[in-house]
Image 1: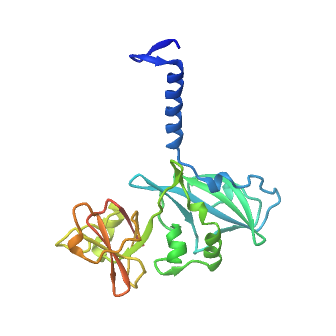
Image 2 (image 1 turned 30 degrees about the vertical axis):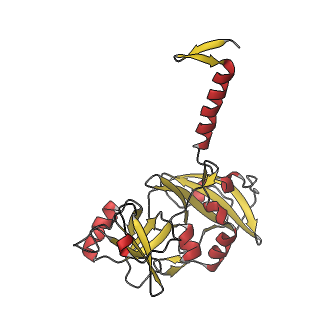
Length: 258
């Protein structure tokens, strides 16, 4: 086999060169973020479709962790009683119709939203399936039922693996901190003046005014604060049946005010 000098390598055959470039190509493809649910939707939306439920979604990012959010106005989907066009969807941003399903004789059209940084009415799968609402306001039962069946909408895939999804936790801070939280998306130093420790809980309590999106493993429970080592950024405690997450800092959290 004839040898070639490729970028200083004097011992690379043509087959070596092709193999090397294929691996580069495979690695590049592995880095692409995939959204299988949307990719497999039917694109053939009937022209005379009416009584449509519009499921608007976007891909958001928290500290380089991508995740899916859907838009619920009044805790339900947007309804349109006319042929579907992006101009009929009352949300800011770049809108693209991505596909369609018919479920229990109801029509659902999926619309991707880009360049929309608004906070209100955007929720995660955790809000829907676990909390069944946001800030204590319950989501319509039909929405919860739909996403229990079609929860794969929230699956993003990279390196042939489904990316972890965020959990949603709540807390309360004094009203004087709300502008700071809204601007910085952080509650560090807002709960206790003496420490940077952040305490969050899962179930919404009356008076909670901050909703926190967190990327954590929700299966580990460690009640002993002495084991809060330098390697651990958070622990999960069970306090008399109430789950509490304790964080050392906010690098796994983004915080929103109501």
